[in-house]
Image 1 (spheres, one colour):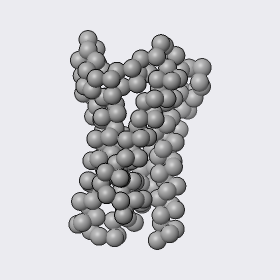
Image 2: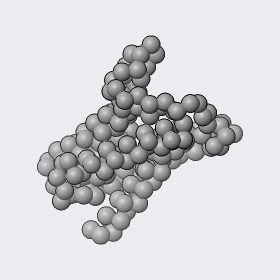
Image 3: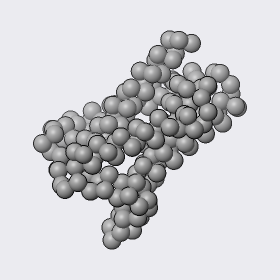
Image 4: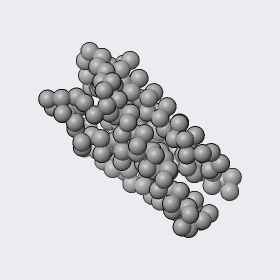
Length: 166
C-alpha cells in the first residue's frame, strides 16, 4: 500500500507540473513567448471573463475539467480527512496560481477561475467517493493505473504539440 501511495504521489506531482505549465506558462516553451500585459484582476465571479463582460462558459467548464483530477488525487492521498479538508489544498493551489498570474502579469487573475477550479476539485472528490463506495479498496489500484495511462497519453500529446511547434 505504501508503494501504491508513493506512485500516486509521483503521478500527482506530474499532474501539478503539467497544470503549472498549462496555467502559468500557457503551454509555452520559452518564457520570452509569454506576453506580459498590465496586471489584471477580476474579483467578481462570473463577470467579465468573456467578451463584452459576459461569462465565458467554455473557460469555466475547462477549469472544472482540468481540476477534476486534483480532487481525485486529493481524495486518494488524504483519505482520512473530511471533504472540506480535502478541498482546501485544491482551493489554495488554485489561489496560488491566480496570485502568480497577477504577480507575473500572465493572463488574468480571475475569481471565476478560482471558483471553477475549486468546483472541479470538489467534483473529483465526490466522484472518487462514489466510486470508492461502489467498488471499495480496489478502486485505488484502478484509478492509479488509469491515471498512469492518462498521464502517459497527455505527455505524448503535449510532446507532439511541442514538436509540431518547433
